[in-house]
Length: 227
Image 1 (cartoon, one colour):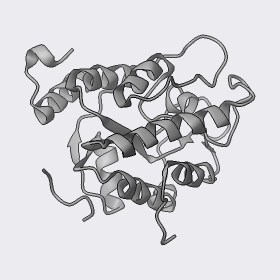
Image 2 (image 1 turned 45 degrees about the vertical axis):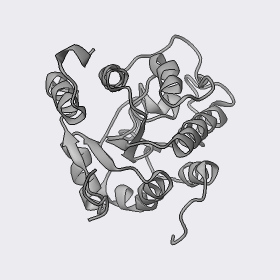
Image 3 (image 1 turned 135 degrees about the vertical axis):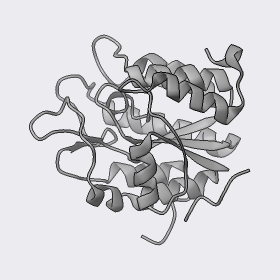
């Protein structure tokens, strides 16, 4: 693909068209266990709204993690965002309310909780994304998480490139070493903070605090993006 998406709707259409084995696409697939009948449409609309707001308002940075998780982005269609933080995500970029696409109790994700603790603290518009923008899972176990493959990553490079073209951020912040290495593989330069999972919460909070110049009371222009 040589042409970049011209707007948020074109970008979301590109993401919705992605197909991989053992990977749930929240913008075109439906989960028979939890999703409402129009869940994919709701998630597409959520993503369009936050991306349009980011384009219109401008964002200083994109935070990029590795891939969507089954408790968070699989259900919301928004990277690093669980259902508990849909309102916070709308407030961050000033969008209309973001809708739930699932039935049953609201589900929380530990990673999203820590991410949003810091997003609220820094008080800056940030766009959230994943190197692999779908939910990869183990074969036969859709409610599990696996790391995407290099082939899957490279097949989605046009998505990452298109997003940076739309937003023109000052820098990309990789959430975790895996995300940084994956971005490097795509030719995208990124600074790194520790991922908050697996005992990394304190290091993540410290890293983001340092990156944004926060002092302890706040904790509740860069290199080219393409190498």
